Image (cartoon, rainbow over all chains, first blue to last red):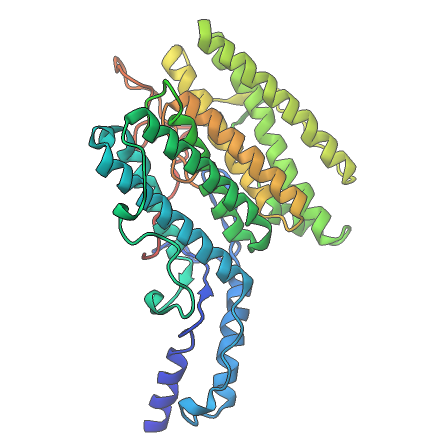
Length: 213
Length: 199
């Protein structure tokens, strides 16, 4: 039926303009809903919450009876955890920019900083996987909090000072994530806490007399 | 009787299910997560005793320091669990080690392994909804990750969430104590493959 096809197309656009924190499931995983153990810890999943989010967004569309885009009305308000995830993504993007800026200024640090930079890329990928955002570039009224290029950041030009700069940045980033912890749902809080712990270890390894990485 | 180094025991949900009929859900979940952390601390106290016996000098001092830290954490957790009206889990008389520990390298790797397991257990506390407990878990997770990085000499991307599989040091290997990618020994518990679901 042609009408059915149109309706499905509309429902498929349900996340445009806001974004939903989604539950990350391992590809090819067992599909159990009760959480899994990974290296010892219980990692919380929130299938129920995800279902609630999806339903909350979809129901207004269903209620319109497929009357076209004009009948959609006001999009649902952004969930607080979406803002937390976006802030964390911005924070990781900024850290990556800082590493790039330092590596441009002090290429000799590439060997030491490479493994840490790789871990920040892993953090960013994991955080982005949490957020369904069809077109992140179109985030209305929210300019990127990050310098578009490493050239936009002023960083020290000596190895010791550059390491100290990154050490302070890592420490601050970890503290910022911990500050967001109580605003996040359980599984996102676990990811934020793990990333904060990783960044704290980065700060440790960037300390004087320690080889980073 | 010996127990293997626990994998955060059953996790808060499994315990919460069993206690749901008698207790409100939140304290039961809190007690379960704290019990899992306590079990990991018991194992760490035992394991550091083994590791310290194979270390000397600064590393032995570091092991003694961390051993005391885990004893203090064990006592703190036991008091918290008691305050919730639950009976703290007891330590096993002995624990099965993840790999044979006969020398310095294996002892250092055991210390890193113990911290990985403690970090994973505290991640269960982070999942609790009570803000103070969540922050307590996050701070403890961070401390364990810092100690693990100190032993391992490198950072992990996701402490508590993902850890290298325990593996004994390769015979005759030299250089920093870096666990290999896998170690399918009898006590090895390789973490399942992971990866971000798209980025």
